Image (tube, rainbow, N blue to C red; front, side):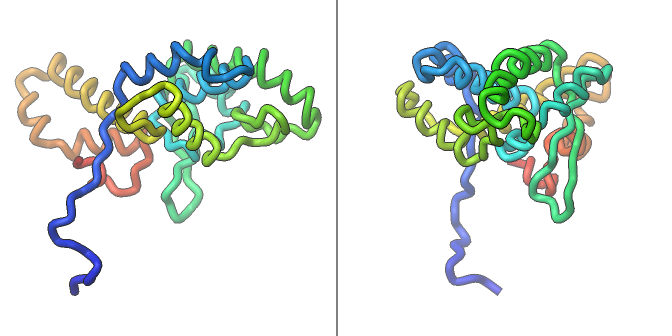
Length: 217
């Protein structure tokens, strides 16, 4: 059965990984984009998490302070993330470099705690990324809208959105896996490339993709 609204020749929409030039441009101009030091530092934390976890924006908005603390205490720096697009509540563990976790912990102690004391005080719900005026959890749509403003004010002509960080993260995983396999198993490298399902399964564990075929593109 063919749906009359579906075009057989419809072009698949793809989104490229974000370029390192665009990432650097955002970091270098944070002081010009945000008047508040808190907003500058919160955006740094958001960018670090997008870069180093490959998480969806909604998943990052659900990270709590205790998740960061637990990851710091974990030998491998495993950060627990809620996994979206699943019928049942699900989560996954993603390794994050301890230096990144320490930077986030500094944000918590210096900037986040100050806002909590000024707003909700003992009614803190524990979310990492909070609204500066209310101290409540900041929603993912607000974070997403911020990228539209960044693109406009920085004059970035290419596409810019949070999901492009996820594509960059996934691409880098594949690159690192291929490099590692080439160093350790040179004789079987060509066969490993042919057995791409092994690579995809590894990436799926880290990114929480429901359907491994969605990694094909």
